[in-house]
Image (cartoon, rainbow, N blue to C red; front, side):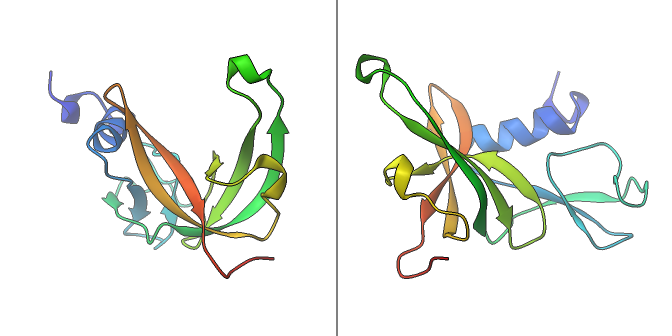
Amino acid sequence: MNTAEQGIQARHQAELNAGHFLIQHCDDCNRHIYYPREVCPHCGSGALQLVQPRGTGTVYATTTVRRKAEAGGDYNVVLIDLDEGVRLMSRVEGVAPADVIIGQRVQARVVVKDGVGLVVFDAVAGEGA
């Protein structure tokens, strides 16, 4: 079975696994959508296209998940508002969890580990709250 036969979520994950971050755009109401869906949650249209976002956004909320050092140490979980108007959950890498702040500007990238792609973010230098 090819990914087109598996539905939009499988196609989206296949793109992530290939290193491509895509979101949906509705041709009828001109709004972006994330997480991918079969129909637009705003207008009910099925005229959805996968498009590449700019990938820039702003930290909307952040929290630190505490773990013992031997379990990998602390990490952050963030909600990011992409400039296209959608919100997603991820993490900001390369920054101590306590240094991730609401309003901080970030840039998306895809990390592929063991063949599975995941969207993470990096802080944008010189831009913050």
